[in-house]
Length: 280
Image (cartoon, rainbow, N blue to C red):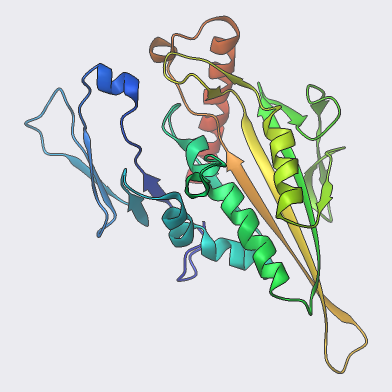
């Protein structure tokens, strides 16, 4: 995520509250947050006498953080940059059941529980409405990566495997991926809901609605505005990738067998590859 000061990458941590299962088991906290200094401290429950290990991030958010506050502080500036013609990506990364889909998607009702994706839709179209002198074209696509296969969540058959291609002009792209033109918040929400309903989910011991695939919702914003003293319009284009990653997991914790076990292995493999890319 882009930082207000111009940083290309921003890493933030958000901690979720205990769920009912953890409360019933009498679980206790092993992590403490210092929101002011953006420090996360981790204590080993089996070695309480050892000093905690501390890590500093661009920002940290505790269990009382509201969805809107998280968005405005850590995502708002990136959407502004995309509207200005830059590319940006927001992705949630973490163990299964840690709250990635909640942060990215949230709930539609009540409005204060909506996540990064629906709030960003409001942001985009409010900005477009506030700039009547500029003509905008907004397109979007929605794909998932399930067991290392790319699938089109907006296509007629979302189980068909699509292929990655590379073009000297536009780089890496997914061949035959559906793109839909949207004109308002209602339209883009319908596209999102259509694809979200096709996402692959399954129950594990750690998460009753565990995402079994990585998903990428891409919004392409093209803008054309007239330039005084010229017969040519100024054109800019920005791309926003909203990524909800499946969580890393251990089969001993999730109780996964059969298809769930295979899915978990592929999820961990792809997350390991992502970690290597980030480290590089």
